[in-house]
Length: 85
Image 1 (cartoon, one colour):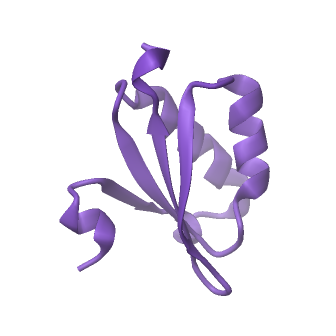
Image 2 (tube, rainbow, N blue to C red; image 1 turned 60 degrees about the horizontal axis):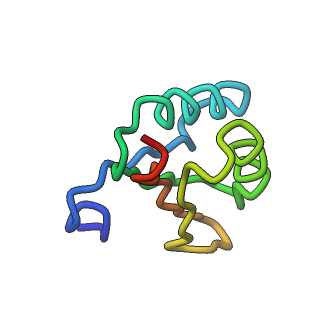
């Protein structure tokens, strides 16, 4: 059981998607988040460039918390801040 399962946060493993589809899927999930909602992103590399892309599109509207930092698996909880409502 993962930490995300314990806390009832959805986990999205994008490692099964081709790289070209990953950001589109993640942006879809971010767009569908309700204020205070979150999901855990599982990736095969540090998704830090995604952080910068999200910050450019949604400045100060989301949280980004590393749960696991590689070397083979990265997990980040991405949430929509309540003040972004």
